[in-house]
Length: 323
Image (cartoon, rainbow, N blue to C red; front, side):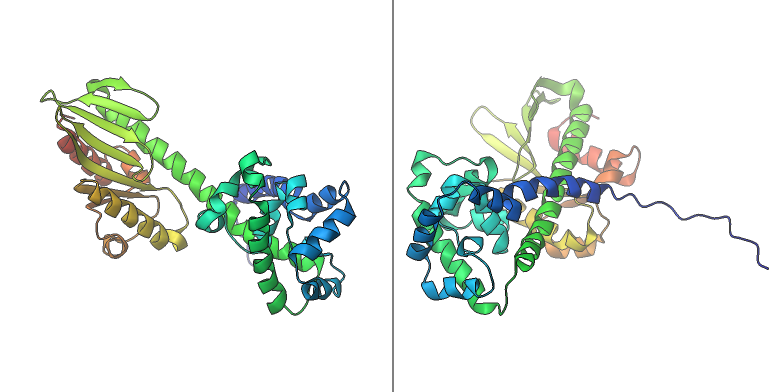
């Protein structure tokens, strides 16, 4: 009889899924079917039915009714949105639109506050009919092209949109954390030269007495600019991609490339891209040919690694300081 094995496998932590669980609870309360049901409890059904008849062709109302579903489950009308502005998120999720895709398109950005804070300004309320007319047409495209409907189908379709939204939000959070780490790392390097510093900016005076501004912002994530008396001289554009999902690395590199190209038009001439996943530089350069130098964030932050040494040397050279 073979002796039992004594080795053990590592434990994989489901920390991301635990975080998603609590976020999903909030999403259910604000944007999914429970939120719509709660809103309908205090609504005038005669007014609701009138608006549905005004905004939606009766043949489509009859079609969804044949599946045992009321019209407002699929079609937004101003009365419902006025009662609960958060429900704009309900319809957005149902139609499979990400926040970036929806609110970044055309006139829809002005309505983002409805979903985020549940508030309608006096300026926006007059535009609700136009918004609902547009979204009703989107809903009609769904109704025309899907053969059968159930409340569980609708719920699952919304969850399909929520998943990437949660993961995208997590990637944004990781990116923000990575940017803060790198900015703090740079602050420590230039500490002897700092003349003024705030949470998002550092002003140093280099060995030649020239002032250089290091700014933590976005697009680029960190910019280094020499401030001359007559003008500002852009030096280095730094893009930081802190996501750890390798499958999405080419998209993140594409985003870095767009930012670097924009920075190039602003006069920057050096472009650094910092990544949290390993990828061959030859592959990375295909997606971001504008990048002058690539760095791995974790190795950059670790003392005496090649990335750490290279970054410090280049930074000192561009800033004109001895490190």
